[in-house]
Length: 107
Length: 237
Image 1 (cartoon, chains in turn orange, red):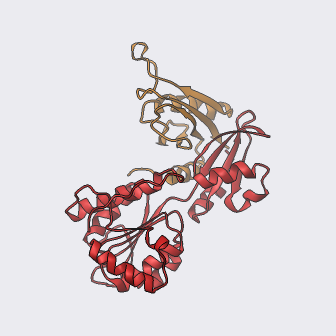
Image 2 (cartoon, one colour):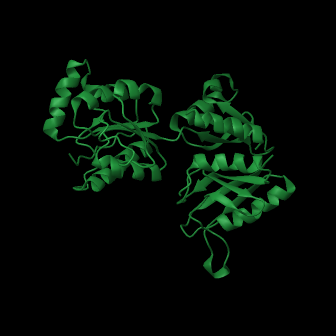
Image 3 (cartoon, helix red, strand yellow):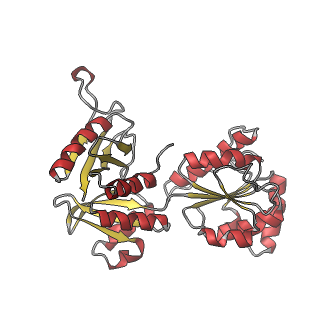
C-alpha cells in the first residue's frame, strides 16, 4: 500500500500514542531538480521504522540515522543533501538537486 | 512538534479543512493556524498567500525565518456512474491519493461485488452528493451517459467550484448536454469548465485506458500553476 501524506501524519500520531519515540522529517527547501516537493514528510520511530519519503529513496537512510539522534537529544536538526559524489560513496541525490530537511522530535 | 498540535492537525485534515504549521527556523517554535483563523494571525498575509497556492515554503517575516507547512485536504474524486470505466478509474485514483466515491442510483450497477473497497452510494445525486462535502479540492467525473443522473450532478459540481469537472460523451452528446444545461441557466463560462470529451488525448480505447486518460487530465488540472491557462486535451468519448 502506498502511503499518502495523510497516512504519514496519522502514523506519527498513532505511533507516538502507542508510546514509541517518534521524529518527523519535512522537506523545507529544494534547489534544482528534487524528487519530492517542499512539505513532504517522513516519520521515523526509535527502532528506525519509517513511512513516507523526502527523496526518491536516495537519502532516507541518512535522514533516519539523523532522526535517531534527534529522538535521543530532543533537539531539532536541519540537514542538507546535495549532488551525490559517487567516488566518495557519500549519501547524495543522483538527480542533481539539493534539498534541506528539517528533523524534529514529536514530543 | 507537540503531540497535541499533531492531533489537532490530523483532526482538521480528517474534516477536510486546510491548516498551516508555522515553524521558526531559529528557535524551532511551532504553532498551528487553522484556515479559518488566518485572519487573526500576525503573519496573515504570508499565510493567506501560501494557502491560496497550496504550497509549503520558507518565508522571511517579522518573526524571522519561518517554514510554513501547508496542509490542504487530500483531493477527493466523486464519480457518477458505477460503470466499466469507473471500475478502473477508482483504483487508479486511490493509488494517486484520492478519496473516491461513486454515486449511481441503479442498484444493478452500484453493487459491492463490482466495486470491492470503494465507497459506492446507490442513491440519486440530489440525495447522495450534499453530504460528500464536494469542494475546490474535489474532482468530479460524470460517466453514466444518462442526463437524469449526470446533469444534476454536474450542476452540483459547478456550484461547489470543483478543481476538475469532466463528462463522458462524444462531441454530439456534449452539444446536447450544453443545450440542456443552458436551459437550467448556466452560461458559457460555467460550461467551459466542463472537460468534454473527457480525458487527455492519448488515443484511449478500452475502459481502463480511458480511465488513465481521465486520471492524467485530473492530475494536469491539480498540478497546474493557477495563473497559467493551459490548452485542454481532448480524447475519449
